[in-house]
Image (cartoon, rainbow, N blue to C red; front, side, top):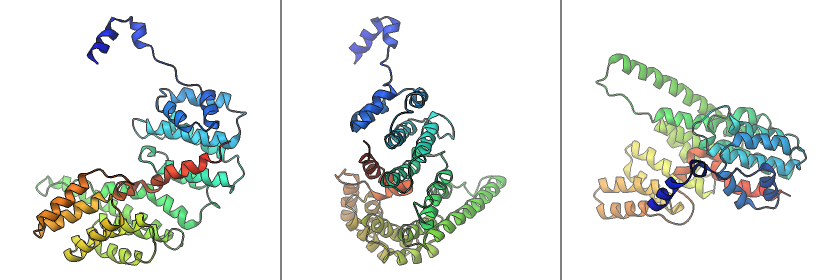
Length: 344
């Protein structure tokens, strides 16, 4: 490396600054239609100027088939959003996503491609790097594709993430200035009011079979995060008969353990954590939680084993706890693959 750097210093300044140009929109789109998706993804990861690429697509893409153009634009937007330095409501990254949506709206609604595209778009919107794009405006174009329960769920998820953030902020010490404590108390009341607004959205979603299981789980999780364990536990008990999905059941068991532990019901909490581990081999959060409670009761050997397992990388899906606040983002790979099946 040092030799390469030294050699670089001997080159003319113009040669040192030379960079390969960004791929053209036409070349990227041609590769995309040839289903060379890995190649396109790799090239998009190296694009330096998405604003220029967006202008090229607008200039050269008028004759491109609409379905392929809508899918391509969504993937370009996703790549651009991942590269943003900070959440913004404007810029070429957001513009590319809007372009993709406008193209998709020109297609016949409720077809197979439309359904696949809309699902993939929701996953992109749920990504942490897509913060700053309002989901509400896009949901207005999805009515008829999803029932009101699912719409309420999609509306709730970005607000859910914000409410978790507000609930988990470091609290000021009791010895701080009185005015600071008053300001914190005021923010806490505002945060709780916002949490109750999100809870109302989840309650709406729970009226519909399509969203009942996950809405129940998320409502309980949010209440528990605000330390409303007395409200969370009955919802978690109700969840038990709502879904066979291992991902959701793992999260329900983990959250039950946390609320039971907070309520001083240690034996039941241990059982819940063990159930969570059984449901998900890579449940690191559940292992660490169980290790803590086992260690406190004298089970040091088991606690050491659990911590070692949690810190050891295992093949398989990620810990659901790490995906929870991403909402639909966890489905992005599968939904993108389904969308790509329609690219011709």
